[in-house]
Length: 333
Image (cartoon, rainbow, N blue to C red; front, side, top):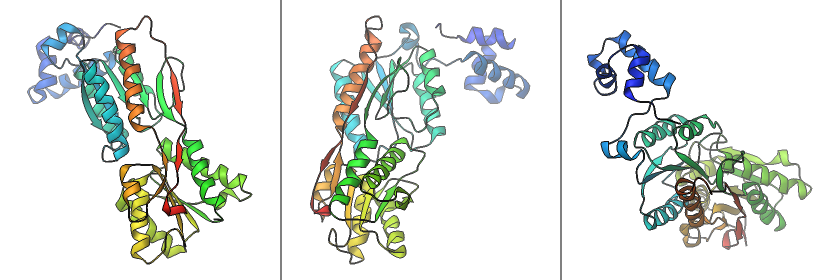
């Protein structure tokens, strides 16, 4: 698909190219009615400004974009390390964007990446709307999903089976005698949080328990501080026999709050996290967790992306699904 130029926008809006340039760079100098007409033309034509003259000549840059949900989570830091290593080996630079779980912020980040004419984008999307990714593809920017399955054959994706992970985590504590289970999770707008919950419910069903008895505590963020607050709520309402957290940061916060309140882990409450970040094994009570191949997710996704960019005629789209691995430690023994 050919890129839309400033001249195309100008012709569509019935103004000069200089007026379009002013709207893009000095909008205060343009009359409101004219500015609105130009902005409408930009939207209708799908115009994206060029980031630099050299990129303009090449049509693309030697950069790729990486958009993640929470760069403060060590899981995504490790994914980014895998991405950067492969990109560097192949002569590419990486532009990192952190959506913080906000679809609006993600949209702004993707717009900037498009303006910079990145060669491709790796993304852990904050929602399930494919339209923003389709717009990138329409501009000739390849897209690969990271830690998220694809639902279409013309899309590469590298993911981990989160339903299986949630099932294994809950089954582990239920097999050790727990009959009441709480699930501490981040926003249930995040696919991983939803699928891990569904896996936990499946494990309860398999153990002869009512899955509707799963006590779900939803937090606005997936941080240790949010985990501490969730633990305080659990203590106030009566502790379950086991707590499963949607990631290790939440679990470490829960652990800290429980120990500070005099609750013995695992004697009174078993605790399991997800991701197996480095801090999990080093905590006061070492944390049982579901390990994901985080670095490999980044490496393989980048290899797929750059193969699609550099070999479009021979590239075969792949959907790669890893299985998480239970790592048992003191918090459930």
